[in-house]
Length: 416
Image (cartoon, rainbow, N blue to C red; front, side):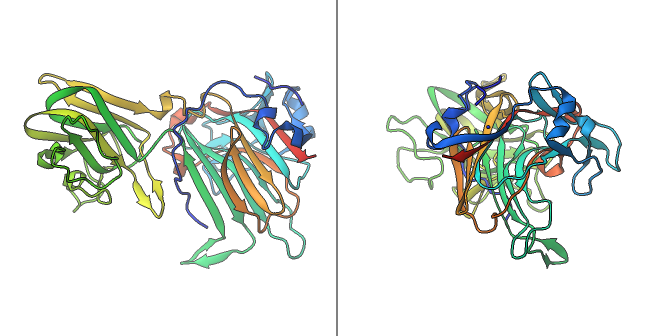
């Protein structure tokens, strides 16, 4: 597990990486931007010591919380077997119904490359964080800032945030501050294309999902078999005479609807990606299409989520597409991010930030995710490791009890 010892806006789904997250462990040096020859390790914690030694370098919160659902205590932070564990427990303490852990370094840092290798708590509703934040009043003219290198949500979300906590304003009776947030969901995508090597003959198709929140389906297309291939899933429907979308003639039923007065599922076959069926929030979601008679299908496509600006939001993390053979449903294609290589609680992943006086550059497993101009982060701050329970990270259930965010190491490098 250990590597060689040598470190204002709502979140947007920017992209879905298609390259699988592998379980192979790269060396720490291989993940450094520009290669190891450009960096010198200046501080690290490998968590290879007895639990009581943690307090020599880290401070624990030890109090209740009002902005999250858990209080956080030193007892929930354990060093053992070469890693640090921040542990969730279902217990009433400090005015909260849950407990967890939150620690920060006694030392403060300014500029360099900051890296942490950890894996998420394996439950929705958890916020697994590696970040920098000033926690003392800044000098005159300086801002109180927060850089979230990753606020990770199980199973596959990486959230990067930059907060200016000094310039607080009130909007519609609520206090707010300038923020810049971007989210990356690995493994999910808005367009799904299922091209069949062996076509199926059926009268009925079904798309289902156990996604924890609303399901948004823009279009479903079931095409006839054509040798020339099929259009891009996100493109407007074509008028090629040889291409037939059987969904246009289908009777469409659905599991439920998000709002009363919007009980229609026909929008999934109106030829417009921007219109959509939005399911009920709870329970299994499904939409079914029944054709007037059996059709031979060579390709099924669907779009999910919705476009906000240039970014896709609320994409589903699991689905199953099935066809009816006259007596039973047969699965044509399925996907579940929790069971695949995109489960960030399954294996350790490495999250990094290069912080300079000019830029903030965010990394995931050595790959650049995001680059922003640095306008306020210009004085020292401690490193934070935190686990929290929050409803906007997914449904909060008893499955959280006993889960932990497990940290392999934290390292800080400076350019040579």
